[in-house]
Image (cartoon, rainbow, N blue to C red; front, top):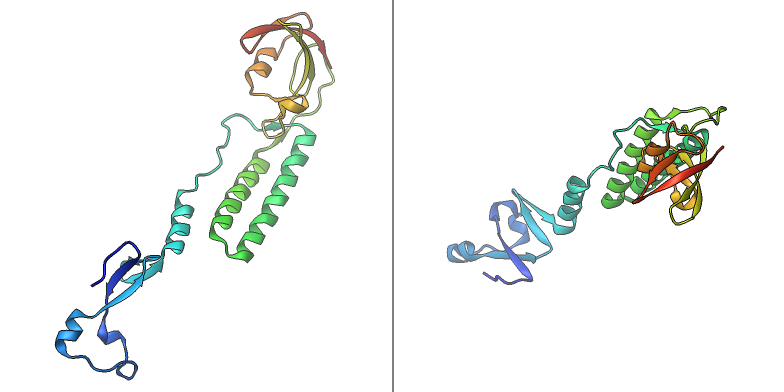
Length: 200
């Protein structure tokens, strides 16, 4: 029997091979006969399975779901459109992954499809505010920080928020500290404070 890092051995069951495919062996040969198979194969119960297949199966089992926020899924009209676009893209990606039979791609695309399907199902459009006397969902708020920096943020849904583009999630600490506040009020902003100078 050969045992090293490159090969594995599997006992050969003579009854599974037709006599016409091999010559009869003497009893002592039959007892000692082994089949050398690549290390890339492994036993799974009574079956031989490729390690690549097992790796894909493990991947399918271990791939975690995308985290879903516990907060209400409030969105703007533009945010709902973004979710619908993401859902359509995820559906196309899943169909393409299935056609390719790539198990890892199927798992990843399926996870995204489930996420966006759930987000679309729970999305609640909040009408744009008409009263700008205080900070509400959908308003744009301009603040002045302790260091003199002036910044404007629009408060939107979690999936549509992008601070680098001037929008923050309604569940972010800054947004939560500003809700219900008016021009002239001071709120917590990071490690410091900021004054509200404009609400639109």
